[in-house]
Structure formats: structure tokens, C-alpha cells
Image 1 (cartoon, rainbow, N blue to C red):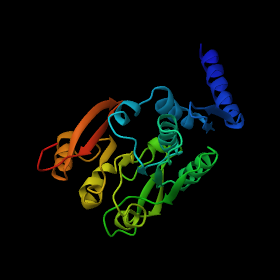
Image 2 (cartoon, rainbow, N blue to C red; image 1 turned 90 degrees about the vertical axis):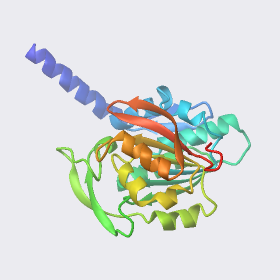
Image 3 (cartoon, helix red, strand yellow; image 1 turned 30 degrees about the vertical axis):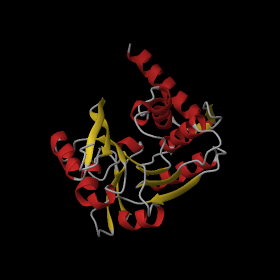
Length: 256
């Protein structure tokens, strides 16, 4: 049994090594081609395009024309936004997007993935960490898998690095002076920092699609803070140990 188990582990290891060299690509309904280079990207591709984890949330919103992607990873969420825009509104302008990640390798990968899509994109790519307001740099725990990298939660094999912090106020002023339609946030625990320190900037968005990890507080406190900022919970769903949730801005006069 031990020998068979060892052979299975070896076969699996070799399979994933071969996968890296295979240059695998998938074509979406819109005609956009999505490259997948390793098992971590395969897991993300499956979550977004096969299991369609975000689709029912996005179906509750008008098609966003301006999107801030906090924690862009390989850029697959932004590809999803492009795909939905092309399929639902052919011939219309594609959304303007700003993609941010604390992992420089992820930012470079996202840029290459979107550039390979052959879509006429309007995208800005930013390498940086969302820290406290006024903070210049902060520690980030960089792991092989983006889902295990975090500024809050350190896994055993993560490497501690120093990353420049993003000035969200300046970024909004430069890219979304009239506000924006959607902020997607998957920053592995940093979402608590986002709602605590950047409330005024969040108010410029009409909707927030957030993966909540609960590393620094309770779900009730998290929702309460967003309610104070003028957001109501539209939909929530467990995502493994965490939650995916959509919040939308409401009119304080009508309560809607």
C-alpha cells in the first residue's frame, strides 16, 4: 500500500509539472481565450468559469462599466467581467478596470492574461498592498498560491516581504473621479482594513462584491460597519470556510 501511495503521489506531481508546460487555454462564449498555467490557476478558473461562483451575484446588478478589482490574482475575475459585457452587450464599450494585487507576480500575470484576450480593454494594473490610510509600506506574507497569501494570516511556507501601500483616495481620483459601479474585493483578510480605513472611498462605489474571511472580526460587525457606510446586504453565500457577499449602496431617504 505504501508503494502504491508513493506512486500515486509521484504521478500527481509529474502531472502538475507537465500541466505547467502544456500551454492550456480555454475559449469562453464571448470568444475570449483564457490561458491556465498551473494547478492554482486551474482551481481559480474552475471556481469562476465552471462553478460560476460570482455569476448569480453579478446577475443582480446592471452590467458594470467601471470596476476596481482588489486582489486580482491572475486577472480571471476581470476576464469574467469582459466576457459578460461582450455576451450581453455586443458592440458596446467594454468596462474600464483597475486591477490591484500585493503579489507582483500576480499583477504581471493578470496583465499578460488580459492582453492575450484580444479584447480592446481599458485596464490599469497596480502592484501594491491595501494598508492603513497614510501608511507607506507594510508586511505581506507571500505564498505559492495567491489564496494563501495575506497581510493578516501567515501560513507555514509563506515568505514575509515588504510591499508599498496603495493610496486608495488618489487611485479613485485618478481613475474613477465620478465614482464607480463595482468593487470586487478578495484580499485574504484585508477586507476588514478596507471597511475600517477607507470608508469614504468605498462610498464612491455603487456595489461591493466581497469575500469575507473573518480573520479580524465577526460577520455581524462587518455588516454593521458597511451599513454605517450606506450599504445593504443584497446576497450572501458560504464559500468554503468564508463567505461571498454582495452589498449595494442604498438611498438613505428611501432606505432602498
